[in-house]
Length: 152
Image 1 (tube, rainbow, N blue to C red):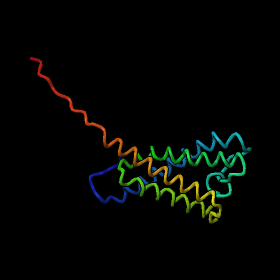
Image 2 (image 1 turned 30 degrees about the horizontal axis):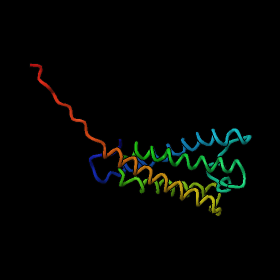
Image 3 (image 1 turned 180 degrees about the vertical axis):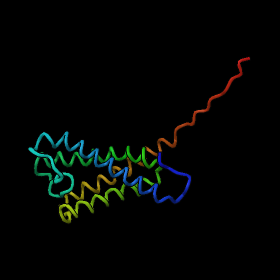
Image 4 (image 1 turned 45 degrees about the horizontal axis):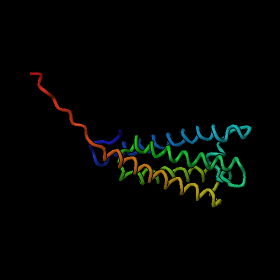
């Protein structure tokens, strides 16, 4: 979609990163509102950016965990739509999760929970691998060739 003719276009790369980041957080917010919103009295940014919300000791923590995993799978679809190149999927997925790490550090401090790291690593792997698979699958499709027949 955003792939340009130029090899090095920093504005294109920055716009792709911003679109991917925003799309990821919109999907994460939707999944959080569906899975976590009915379990808590008030849904706030703690569930998105604080590592302590990702826990396996409560049902709400499992719902937060499921939201992150589902969001990474939807993020693979965003990689297909926004990035459109299998060779760039790992780069953009890693960039997304590095930016997410920085936001989490600013919001709640360094993530000291092993669960947060496992979920984040799993989400990165799922997004990158599934995104690459989707892009390769699209690239391997046959190119339709139509014939023009004369009406004589």
